[in-house]
Each structure stands twice: as C-alpha cells, then as structure tokens.
Length: 466
Ligand code: SF4
Image (tube, rainbow, N blue to C red; front, side):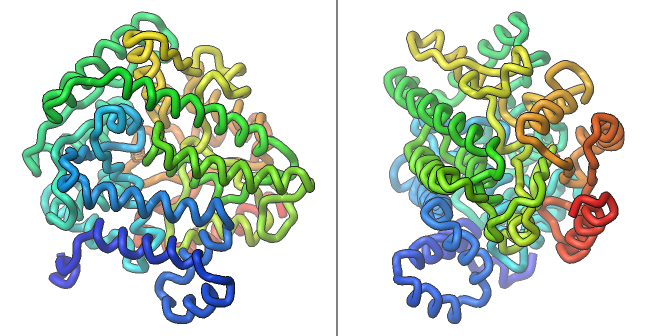
C-alpha cells in the first residue's frame, strides 16, 4: 500500500468527512453554497444529500453516527463485530455490540472519495484475499487488514452457499487477523418447518458465541425493546413501499439507498427510525401533490434493479436516474420481507412475522428475520425455484410497475453470474427489456462510470424506452 495511505485511519477519515458534510446543512442556503467553493473534492456527494432535503441530511447524520460509534466503541467498553449486509445488526445492538458492515463501508468510501477504495482492495489481495473475491468486502477489510481502523473484536457472517466469496472473505479475515468467528448456517429452505427449526437452533448458538465474546448474558428486555423498534420500522417500511407503488413515485432515487443503508447499519435502532420518518414525511408531501420524487419533476419510466446498485463516486449512479427522469424502483437490497408488506402475499412463505411474547418467540422472530435478508432469501440456489431470484424479481417488478429491469453486481458474484443470462432470457420472455451491466459495483477500475453510463444510455435508446 502507498505509504501516504497509511497516514490516516480509514474510519477516522470517513467520520471526519461525513461529520463535516452533515454539519454543512445547518447553515443558510447562501452559507452552504459558499462552503461548496471550498470543498471541490466533496462537493458532489455532499450536494446530492443536502439537496435531498431533510431525508438526505439525515442519511449523512446516520453515517456520521455509525462511524462515531465504531471510533468510540472501545472507550465505551463495547466490542466491535465485523459482519455482512446479509446479517441483521439488530441482534448486535440488543447485545450491546457495535457492528461494522464491511460492504456498506466499502460503498461509502467509493461514493465519497475520488481515489475509491482501490488501495485497500489491492492491499487485501496483497495479503491473500483473491482478487476474484467480491470487492464489496475487500475494500473495507483491506483497511482493517492494514490496521487502518479500530481493532475488530470478533466476526459473524452467513455460511457459503448463500455466497461463497462473501463467507470466504470473513473466514480469511478471521484467520488473518486471528479473531473469533461464527458462521451462521444459511437455511436450506425458507418457510419449511424443519429448516426453520434448524436455523433457530443455529441462531441460538450464535447468541451463545456473542455472550462469550462480550462476557454478558443476553438481556431479553433489551432484545424485546430492539424488536419493538424493528416492528415500528417494518410498519414504516410498509408505508414507504406503498408510497413507492404510486405513479409517479414520490420517492427519489436516493431514498432507495437510504432505506437499505439504514437497515444494514441501524436496524432496531432509533437512528434508522428517524431516517424512515424523514423519508415518509418528504414522500407524503410529494404524493399529496401527485408530484414525482425525481429532480426533473417528471417520471418518464421506471427501472427496477434486480440485484444491487452501482456505488460510484458522488452518487453519480442515482443522480443519473434523476437527470434522465427515470424512477429507480429499488432492488434486491431495498425491498423488505416482513409480513406487514403487501407484495409478500404473492410469494407464500417468504415473509417473517415478529412475535415478542416470549424469549422463545423472539429467537424465532429474529432468526427468521435474518433469513429474509438479501441473498440469504433468494440467491442461494437454483434461480428459478419457488421464491428464488426469478419469482421474487417478477413479483417486485409487477408490484412496482417496472418498465425495464437492470442487473448490476460484482465480477466476484458467482451466484448471480452463473444464472444472469438465463435470468435475463426468462425476464425478457415475461416482456421486460433487460440490461446487464458489466462494471464492478464497488470498483470503477473494472469499467469507468463514463463507459457504464454510455452503455446504460445505449440500452434505453436501442430498446426505444426513452
Ligand atoms: S452475492 Fe455477490 S455482491 Fe453479494 S457478497 Fe456475494 S459476490 Fe458480493
């Protein structure tokens, strides 16, 4: 790694940048506009969130708090757990542990810094993590491998099968950094009693593991409080999903990433509830006027991302939707599967139910919630089986009135690249124009944003969509 990269810690740098960006919105419009002249490097990303109004500013505050929690964890006597976006942090909050969601940290570095997370990714490969592994973990993990972040105390993830490259990255991290590690088995089936029972038992073991790491027993009152907050958030997400189904959608493209970034960082925590409140407030105002959430004010068509987004500099990907009057109808990461949400009715067995009546039912609830997270839910086996990738995509595309479907992933994503052409063929048969993006969602060296944008524009033009 370049010596200058080692001068500052990754998490401290990010915290400082996001904290300054969040504070910028406290000034008057004139003050904010003047301040942009002094931060040319950060202007693009800051302006996108600040222009997003209360919800956008709340996103900056939430990220700022996330990094501050990490930076102050040890002085507050808390343990830090490195984990993945397909593992709900709610159990960690219930047990007083500070989570680090590696994929989110990589995405944020890419969005905020022109230099991206490239040096950290390369460093991770230099110490042994294959460059064919998923870039989403490699970026943030590289910084922690180089000891450019708070020291991680233990690691929790989901097992291979859901995503081998993801699980192997955490197994490698545990061995390289010599940290205790728990791999939660992914459930073979969703909604099947035997499989669900096995998953709850496994989850119980996970909780025992965390108890050993923290030296404290699970506090069921605290778990109940966290689950009560999750329940509240699920009801709010159901409202957001309803608002998103309106034509035009009152949600902006940025709201989609806000919904899932908030869930990956603060599920069950009040920070996320505040963010959801702001999104609902903003979207309801627009909906009342029948207005579009897009900056251009008109919705020409709707695109559904049937995998993940593109985490390129300055929120360029989401801004591109805005600039072209294309509504971003969310993707595999943003949509949610609690039984409070309407579209889950068309996918029997897919939804989880929260029950806080006893310690037993709380275990069952939180384990089933975890099993409904992205990838664990629908990218863990044959793409065209019940409730898997194809069925889920078709149900969501129909629910949100998508006009076209777009795939984006990482070259490391073997679970999706193995099927993506078959998926595209099947989705086209259902009448949806499909575009497969060939960039790396987290590494712009694979394909530049300019090239990606040109290919997107070509797709919309050639298919006669705009
Ligand atoms: S499924 Fe794809 S994007 Fe998700 S962790 Fe695995 S390789 Fe990365």
